[in-house]
Length: 372
Ligand code: SF4
Ligand code: SF4
Image 1 (cartoon, helix red, strand yellow):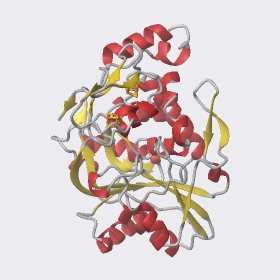
Image 2 (tube, helix red, strand yellow; image 1 turned 90 degrees about the vertical axis):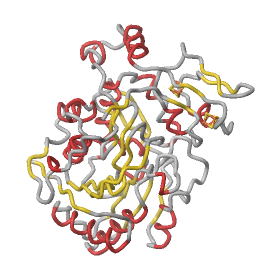
Image 3 (spheres, helix red, strand yellow; image 1 turned 135 degrees about the vertical axis):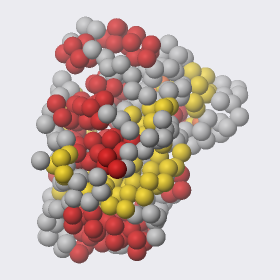
Image 4 (cartoon, helix red, strand yellow; image 1 turned 120 degrees about the vertical axis):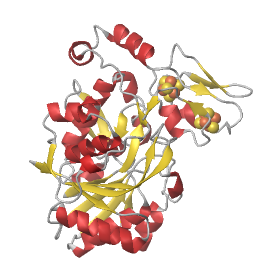
């Protein structure tokens, strides 16, 4: 039986957030952290100003640190690794680093000496994960309530993908091109990390073309659970999805990563469903047999189907600031810098939308259907 706590919090005033986070942690039976070393994993993505609502809000991180301190945690660390992480990256734009300094907790660089792991459910895919995982007693996932162009939602499970350091992430889209395959990778990573607790910033979330180019949406809630899957299930429900249509949730249930939530000690998600929430339209699933059992035999058919289902991104000239971030992250080497705009080779493009995630200028359009 899994329970998810949803409490109200109408804004980011620190006192209000402190009270809501403390209440959520208590009602959700946060594990005993006394004497423990804890890693907090906020969603930083590409480190941007808090009003863009891409990152977990720094006040939520601060409130979580206060709860851990009160609970007697011996040591608190905070970390994440954006896809295009610069050397000595510190998340100052989002205010996350300033909170680490002010609260005297350690910011961890995930790129330093990562450890290679074999990821379950992925035909022995090997990936580096932050070595801090071996030092800490518990990992807490602190996601943001957001849509995701590729995976429909991003939550407590998907947030853990940030433990894969910097550019090691985007090539995974080549090997796991369908949503179902990519979900297996996310669930495999979560089964290694085993987050002890998850707390989601849903005070102002994101709708539309997330996780980086959607619009802020006032929701006024904080969600918490010891079961990351149950928390993601609840988020999807509030967004208006049938949660089992979200590939990470379907795969997580299939692999017993967590459970469908059955109890809600505070607010009930059925009373919070957002009928007008702008979400990504669910598309037909790739055949389980083709995608998961014999992918190499069917790789050409899978690629063809992915290209039929998903449109290639469109690059605009006016807003483009020629930063080349999209080119640097593209795992298919499908992009070049033209005279006026970025040029895409649509035949090479695998429709992973990593370019859209990192573009700081909203110069890339992804024509996935947004529904409400
Ligand atoms: S162009 Fe964009 S969507 Fe296409 S493969 Fe490159 S990063 Fe992915
Ligand atoms: S499209 Fe976006 S990411 Fe690519 S060069 Fe232009 S501004 Fe940078």
